[in-house]
Amino acid sequence: MLLHFTKMHGLGNDFMVVDMVTQSVRLPPDKIRRLADRRFGVGFDQLLIVEPPTDPDMDFRYRIFNADGSEVEQCGNGARCFAKFVRDKRLIGRDTIQVQTAGGNIELIIHANGEVSVNMGVPRLQPEDIPFRAQEQRATYDLRIDGEEFEISAVSMGNPHAVIQVDDVNRTPVARLGSVMEKHGRFPKRCNVGFMQVLDQAEINLRVFERGVGETLACGTGACAAVVAGRLQGLLGDEVRVNLPGGTLNIHWSGEGHSVIMTGTATRVFEGQTRL
Ligand SMILES: N[C@@H](CCC[C@H](N)C(=O)O)C(=O)O
Image 1: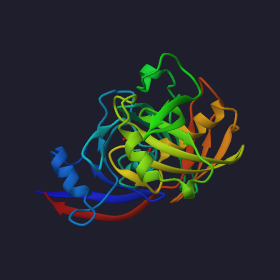
Image 2: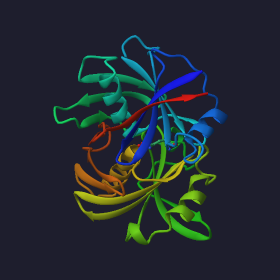
Image 3: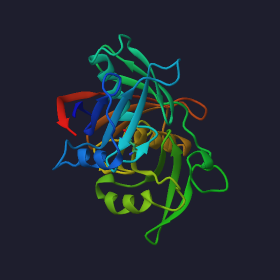
């Protein structure tokens, strides 16, 4: 059976996007892992599936699978690519698109310059909603990783994130700390781990070790979580440029109870088909 797909990326965070509105294929976790393999398969950080919605008020259902085959709740860079994909394929004619995800409903807005803004919803900060094991909600928590003490923030953007402030992202052992932190017992569903260097109130550098993938060139939900964590600590303002290894995202958040708005590019790389 032939599977048609589009290879896309958001700042180098790359995706295989599959339209399951017009085709129907079964993709169990072992197949996803094989397709994600960068030597033997197509190669991607996440597989994005476009499905008809189960909620009549939504335009599409958006499902996300990490390279390790696990289904996850949210993907910010993927959401921008999702918007470009459904417009380019003429699955919708509008520039504002309502999408249902396992991490909550999101709104995608395609701008005239091709950039996409995503209303990522209100970040969840209560420990049980992240989920994170703690007695009460705080801006930072102490955590022991590999025998060292760290101050981390815990934020859900639909998916769970830990954010750690560092002096210099280029001198941070992201793979070593990220792989331990991802599986820390206080995050029962594991977590994505962001390492944030604050440059000033309006700009940060960020590297993210993603759950189920490893370090990626960019993470949209990670950028949102870092801005939320930084603002809650009084380090950042409402409008923040987030520099990731693959490029820059603009994040707007005006504080607790408000939605996070992410704006950035979405790029199509090629169309492909593969035999399953
Ligand atoms: N690349 C993403 C996040 C994808 C999911 C994440 N790895 C998880 O397991 O939650 C983004 O751009 O947000």
